[in-house]
Amino acid sequence: MYPEIDFLYLNEEDMIKAGVLNAAGCIETMRDTLSLFGKKDYLLGGPKANEHGLQMNFPQKSEIEGFPLDDGPDRRFMAMPAYLGGRFHIAGQKYYGSNSHNTKYGLPRSILMVTLSDVETGAPKAIMSANLLSAMRTGAMPAMAATYLANKDAKVLSLIGPGVINKCALMCYMEVLPEIKKIKIRGSSKNSKTALAMKKFIEETYPKIEEIILCDSLEEACRDADVVSEAMSVSKENMEEFHMEWFKKGATVFSMGSFLYRKYEDFLNTTMVVDNYGMYEKYLSNFKARGEVDELGKKREWVIMGIHFVHLVETGKIQRDNVKDICNIVNGKTKGRTCSDEIIMCSIGGMPLEDLSWGYDCYQNALELGVGQSLNLWNQPYMN
Image 1 (cartoon, rainbow, N blue to C red):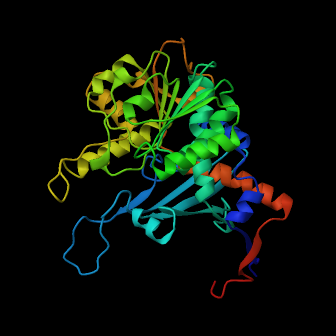
Image 2 (cartoon, rainbow, N blue to C red; image 1 turned 60 degrees about the horizontal axis):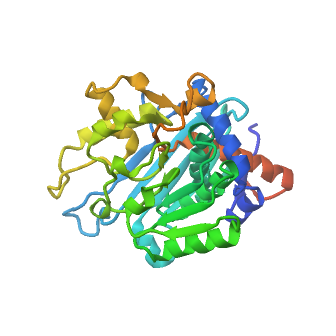
């Protein structure tokens, strides 16, 4: 006789009731997550248990009629399995499909779900809406890292890419950077819809902010900023290239999206920090495996900050120890910021561990609050 299996279904409204937008709580959960990551109490996919996930990319052309094509930025499906130990002791995965054309239908570019599973049996414990979950854990990561990397008296915050991720990041930065007085915003244009929406959100939510600047250029957004938060989602042909001279002494730069930079050796004069070095190694390996040009003959370029750091190590410009790991900083094995003038470049690629941990905490809150819908998988399996 097999036991019946029930699991909790949480839609987006349930997730909000369960506290998914609790910025302060999410920051501390990310701290717990990175501490466990540093202690190796986790598993990710792949032979080295360090991969971001399994991604299915669509081709740019096909002879098959009706075949789905890569005709816009971030066109993909992805499954991201993981296990996280410690107080969580949970397995599961994030799964999503992404298509920039979704906006035509009033949908977000990516639609995400997270499943939590029993570590021993694999039985589902919860299935939850994860767009807000993923955005919050992504935004909480640089804010958590900022507690170690940013100057405590940071007053100017720059948001490059004023979409959902940087909106959530802003909510989290405001928890840990109490001296912020000026916010600079860089959208696709000075008066883009998202830039204006971000400005309105700041005015309504954070009245203590004294000045909000809508920037004409990437350079304007970077100059004089104490903390730069990059979370762009743009096609490669529309990317602007960053330049190191734009960043002031003491700036802390977080990249969660696209950081196009071609003079790699400029990073040698900065402090380089990553969330998961092995993940960027795999990214670079995959990039090389795909070839120097794409299916249309265009030159490929990587645009992820952490890959720049791995490239410097693999070409012998620096040693692996020159790239700091956030987890070692959290666990007290490595110092974060060591002086007020150093420029710190931090790559936040994100891991499904973070979705599991914040999803787990929201799930526990939902159980306590009686939120969500209990669904039955089976009373007993039809075949056994």
